[in-house]
Image (cartoon, helix red, strand yellow):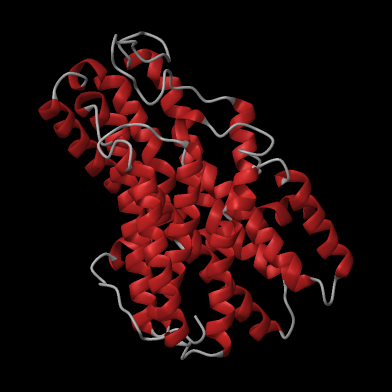
Length: 374
């Protein structure tokens, strides 16, 4: 993207891929290992949520760059191009994940030990879910990004909670840049965003995290050198705050399983802003990140949205096998991670391929036009 070097782009790809892999491992622990291990869940949740906040900041940054490039190419902000770009990026992997979830929910009664969509109830063991179901209203809500606002997030694909929040940040950002030339449409978009999100406190709590990335993109677009002195001080201060919220969250029981909402939300905001400061240093040349994971970025979004349905399905198959045996749980976890990575890589070859999606859209357009003119 404009004003980003290939080196910087590769580092961002590496961070994005690593964040997706960390979330994968975190959910593996929560779903398949915790029933056998029985401890350290709080710490794993913090690490996983840090990875999600990395996604938020990077998302804001890349959307900010996209807006800048949009304006540069079109002289003004082109909302049609913006909406098209976002739809092509978001929908194919999302639809694939929801189709996978629905298919697995249909198959579940035929292969689960219970003979139904319900998971087994085992005395003294808490599992991440009690059933594997897909509710039509939840699926439709996820497609319209209303989950967490007007509908429930599909229980078989919990990670979708963050996607709906991010999409409404996209809408708000677009409405701001649309305002100078198209005030009515801008007002409608902003009003719609407020109507959908106003009851969700987490949406407003995490807004500074996403918009910190968005703001950094605008700053970097104007001044690629950044100001490493200021951001260095901010990084140092935010590092102290980061340590403080970690201690606050873990103080009572470092190896425990309690997840208290207030400390978790403090951690989300502080860790997100901490990472934003690091990103500012990276973009200004004051920090760097290993590029080891950059090749996995090509399927990181697909991995994020499809791994949990796969994992929950495996849990339904293997509850009796894993719940009282750490070695068994480790084996099933390793196999599930490999399956999730392989499935994500394979599916992403189509759903994250711009050329494939564009070709499919063009074919559909021609088919519709031909039918209408026949």
